[in-house]
Length: 113
Length: 112
Image 1 (cartoon, each protein chain N blue to C red):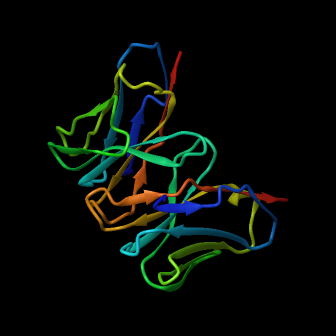
Image 2: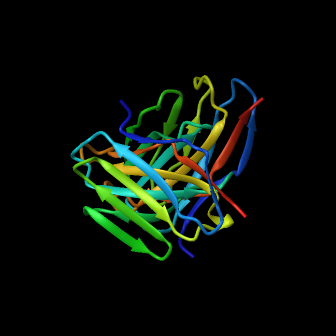
Protein backbone atom coordinates (compact mmCIF):
# COMPACT_ATOMS: atom_id res chain seq x y z
CA UNK A 1 0.00 0.00 0.00
CA UNK A 2 1.20 3.46 -0.85
CA UNK A 3 1.52 6.01 1.86
CA UNK A 4 3.66 8.09 4.14
CA UNK A 5 5.43 6.60 7.11
CA UNK A 6 6.60 8.73 9.99
CA UNK A 7 8.71 7.52 12.86
CA UNK A 8 8.84 7.52 15.74
CA UNK A 9 5.22 8.07 16.72
CA UNK A 10 6.18 9.30 20.17
CA UNK A 11 9.49 10.78 21.18
CA UNK A 12 10.78 12.24 24.42
CA UNK A 13 13.77 14.51 24.42
CA UNK A 14 15.79 16.23 27.06
CA UNK A 15 16.46 19.92 26.68
CA UNK A 16 19.60 20.58 24.65
CA UNK A 17 19.32 17.44 22.52
CA UNK A 18 18.80 17.30 18.79
CA UNK A 19 16.28 14.79 17.48
CA UNK A 20 15.51 13.62 13.96
CA UNK A 21 12.03 12.68 12.79
CA UNK A 22 11.84 10.32 9.86
CA UNK A 23 9.43 10.66 6.93
CA UNK A 24 9.33 8.20 4.03
CA UNK A 25 6.81 8.09 1.18
CA UNK A 26 6.24 5.55 -1.57
CA UNK A 27 3.66 7.58 -3.46
CA UNK A 28 6.23 8.85 -5.98
CA UNK A 29 5.29 12.41 -5.02
CA UNK A 30 7.64 15.23 -5.90
CA UNK A 31 6.77 17.62 -3.07
CA UNK A 32 7.13 16.98 0.63
CA UNK A 33 6.27 19.12 3.62
CA UNK A 34 6.74 19.34 7.37
CA UNK A 35 4.09 20.95 9.53
CA UNK A 36 3.88 21.61 13.20
CA UNK A 37 0.55 21.53 15.01
CA UNK A 38 -0.08 23.06 18.42
CA UNK A 39 -3.47 23.13 20.14
CA UNK A 40 -5.70 25.83 18.69
CA UNK A 41 -3.13 26.97 16.12
CA UNK A 42 -3.83 24.84 13.09
CA UNK A 43 -0.98 23.70 10.87
CA UNK A 44 2.16 25.79 10.53
CA UNK A 45 4.65 25.07 7.78
CA UNK A 46 8.22 24.40 8.85
CA UNK A 47 9.99 23.38 5.63
CA UNK A 48 9.00 22.11 2.24
CA UNK A 49 10.73 20.55 -0.73
CA UNK A 50 9.48 20.58 -4.29
CA UNK A 51 12.24 18.39 -5.69
CA UNK A 52 15.22 16.30 -4.61
CA UNK A 53 18.18 18.27 -3.27
CA UNK A 54 16.12 21.42 -2.89
CA UNK A 55 14.09 22.74 0.02
CA UNK A 56 12.74 26.04 1.31
CA UNK A 57 11.93 27.50 4.69
CA UNK A 58 8.34 27.78 5.71
CA UNK A 59 6.81 30.13 8.25
CA UNK A 60 8.52 28.72 11.36
CA UNK A 61 11.85 27.25 10.19
CA UNK A 62 14.01 28.59 13.02
CA UNK A 63 15.48 25.78 15.10
CA UNK A 64 14.75 23.12 12.48
CA UNK A 65 16.71 21.59 9.62
CA UNK A 66 15.86 19.19 6.79
CA UNK A 67 17.46 17.32 3.93
CA UNK A 68 16.08 15.86 0.70
CA UNK A 69 18.72 13.50 -0.66
CA UNK A 70 16.17 11.04 -2.00
CA UNK A 71 12.73 11.55 -3.47
CA UNK A 72 11.23 9.19 -0.92
CA UNK A 73 12.74 10.70 2.21
CA UNK A 74 12.47 14.06 3.96
CA UNK A 75 13.79 13.87 7.54
CA UNK A 76 13.33 16.75 9.97
CA UNK A 77 15.85 17.56 12.69
CA UNK A 78 14.60 19.50 15.69
CA UNK A 79 17.68 21.21 17.07
CA UNK A 80 18.40 22.49 20.54
CA UNK A 81 17.90 25.98 19.15
CA UNK A 82 14.16 25.39 18.87
CA UNK A 83 12.78 27.15 21.94
CA UNK A 84 9.52 25.29 22.34
CA UNK A 85 9.74 22.00 20.44
CA UNK A 86 6.96 20.09 22.21
CA UNK A 87 4.34 19.61 19.48
CA UNK A 88 2.71 17.26 17.02
CA UNK A 89 4.76 17.07 13.81
CA UNK A 90 3.16 16.11 10.53
CA UNK A 91 4.90 15.13 7.33
CA UNK A 92 2.95 15.37 4.10
CA UNK A 93 3.45 14.93 0.40
CA UNK A 94 1.83 16.22 -2.75
CA UNK A 95 2.06 14.78 -6.24
CA UNK A 96 3.32 18.09 -7.50
CA UNK A 97 3.80 21.31 -5.59
CA UNK A 98 0.88 23.73 -5.66
CA UNK A 99 -1.84 21.23 -6.51
CA UNK A 100 -3.04 21.41 -2.92
CA UNK A 101 -4.01 17.78 -2.25
CA UNK A 102 -1.83 16.82 0.66
CA UNK A 103 -1.37 13.28 1.94
CA UNK A 104 -0.30 13.14 5.56
CA UNK A 105 1.66 10.68 7.61
CA UNK A 106 0.36 9.62 11.02
CA UNK A 107 2.44 12.21 12.81
CA UNK A 108 5.16 12.25 15.43
CA UNK A 109 4.48 13.62 18.88
CA UNK A 110 7.57 15.15 20.45
CA UNK A 111 7.72 15.96 24.13
CA UNK A 112 10.63 17.81 25.70
CA UNK A 113 11.20 16.86 29.31
CA UNK B 1 -5.01 39.38 8.72
CA UNK B 2 -4.88 35.61 8.49
CA UNK B 3 -5.00 34.08 5.05
CA UNK B 4 -7.72 31.62 6.01
CA UNK B 5 -10.10 32.05 8.92
CA UNK B 6 -12.47 29.63 10.56
CA UNK B 7 -14.64 29.75 13.65
CA UNK B 8 -12.86 27.48 16.12
CA UNK B 9 -16.14 26.28 17.59
CA UNK B 10 -16.95 23.98 19.15
CA UNK B 11 -19.96 23.41 16.95
CA UNK B 12 -22.47 20.95 18.35
CA UNK B 13 -25.28 19.44 16.31
CA UNK B 14 -27.69 16.59 17.07
CA UNK B 15 -27.37 13.33 15.19
CA UNK B 16 -29.20 13.49 11.85
CA UNK B 17 -28.98 17.28 11.56
CA UNK B 18 -27.03 19.31 9.01
CA UNK B 19 -23.67 20.61 10.18
CA UNK B 20 -22.48 23.80 8.48
CA UNK B 21 -18.81 24.73 8.64
CA UNK B 22 -17.60 28.04 7.31
CA UNK B 23 -14.31 29.47 6.11
CA UNK B 24 -13.23 32.82 4.67
CA UNK B 25 -10.04 33.66 2.84
CA UNK B 26 -8.24 36.91 2.20
CA UNK B 27 -6.43 36.39 -1.10
CA UNK B 28 -8.69 36.91 -4.11
CA UNK B 29 -6.13 35.02 -6.19
CA UNK B 30 -6.94 31.78 -4.38
CA UNK B 31 -7.77 29.12 -6.91
CA UNK B 32 -8.63 25.96 -5.03
CA UNK B 33 -10.00 25.06 -1.65
CA UNK B 34 -9.79 21.98 0.49
CA UNK B 35 -11.52 20.51 3.50
CA UNK B 36 -9.56 18.15 5.71
CA UNK B 37 -11.00 16.15 8.59
CA UNK B 38 -8.82 15.46 11.61
CA UNK B 39 -9.84 13.12 14.39
CA UNK B 40 -8.34 13.79 17.79
CA UNK B 41 -4.72 12.67 17.94
CA UNK B 42 -4.68 11.68 14.27
CA UNK B 43 -3.44 13.28 11.08
CA UNK B 44 -5.68 15.24 8.68
CA UNK B 45 -7.30 13.51 5.73
CA UNK B 46 -8.70 15.20 2.65
CA UNK B 47 -12.46 14.86 2.32
CA UNK B 48 -13.43 17.48 -0.26
CA UNK B 49 -11.91 19.95 -2.67
CA UNK B 50 -13.54 22.58 -4.84
CA UNK B 51 -12.22 24.84 -7.59
CA UNK B 52 -15.31 26.41 -9.15
CA UNK B 53 -18.03 28.64 -7.80
CA UNK B 54 -21.12 26.79 -6.67
CA UNK B 55 -21.72 23.48 -4.97
CA UNK B 56 -19.92 20.18 -5.14
CA UNK B 57 -21.53 17.14 -3.61
CA UNK B 58 -19.94 13.89 -2.49
CA UNK B 59 -22.21 11.61 -0.52
CA UNK B 60 -23.31 13.39 2.65
CA UNK B 61 -20.79 16.18 2.10
CA UNK B 62 -21.33 19.34 0.06
CA UNK B 63 -18.67 21.97 -0.46
CA UNK B 64 -19.81 25.44 -1.45
CA UNK B 65 -17.62 28.15 -2.93
CA UNK B 66 -18.43 31.82 -3.43
CA UNK B 67 -15.38 33.58 -4.83
CA UNK B 68 -17.06 36.98 -4.89
CA UNK B 69 -17.61 36.78 -1.14
CA UNK B 70 -14.35 34.85 -0.55
CA UNK B 71 -16.29 32.24 1.32
CA UNK B 72 -16.11 28.46 1.43
CA UNK B 73 -18.36 26.17 3.39
CA UNK B 74 -18.81 22.48 4.09
CA UNK B 75 -22.21 21.00 4.77
CA UNK B 76 -22.56 17.59 6.34
CA UNK B 77 -26.02 16.12 5.97
CA UNK B 78 -27.44 13.47 8.29
CA UNK B 79 -24.59 14.08 10.74
CA UNK B 80 -23.31 11.03 12.55
CA UNK B 81 -21.32 10.76 15.79
CA UNK B 82 -18.44 9.48 13.64
CA UNK B 83 -18.34 12.91 11.99
CA UNK B 84 -17.16 14.41 15.29
CA UNK B 85 -13.73 15.80 14.47
CA UNK B 86 -11.89 19.02 13.67
CA UNK B 87 -12.40 20.26 10.13
CA UNK B 88 -9.57 22.23 8.55
CA UNK B 89 -10.13 24.56 5.63
CA UNK B 90 -7.22 25.24 3.28
CA UNK B 91 -6.79 27.60 0.35
CA UNK B 92 -4.26 27.37 -2.45
CA UNK B 93 -3.41 30.95 -3.33
CA UNK B 94 -1.01 30.53 -6.26
CA UNK B 95 1.03 33.45 -4.95
CA UNK B 96 4.28 31.59 -4.55
CA UNK B 97 5.86 28.21 -4.07
CA UNK B 98 4.51 27.94 -0.54
CA UNK B 99 0.89 28.80 -1.16
CA UNK B 100 -1.32 26.39 0.77
CA UNK B 101 -2.73 28.08 3.83
CA UNK B 102 -4.70 26.36 6.56
CA UNK B 103 -7.29 27.74 8.89
CA UNK B 104 -7.12 26.85 12.57
CA UNK B 105 -9.98 24.38 12.24
CA UNK B 106 -13.52 24.05 13.57
CA UNK B 107 -14.24 21.36 16.11
CA UNK B 108 -17.52 19.58 15.40
CA UNK B 109 -19.35 17.42 17.91
CA UNK B 110 -22.35 15.37 16.80
CA UNK B 111 -24.53 14.50 19.77
CA UNK B 112 -26.25 11.08 19.65
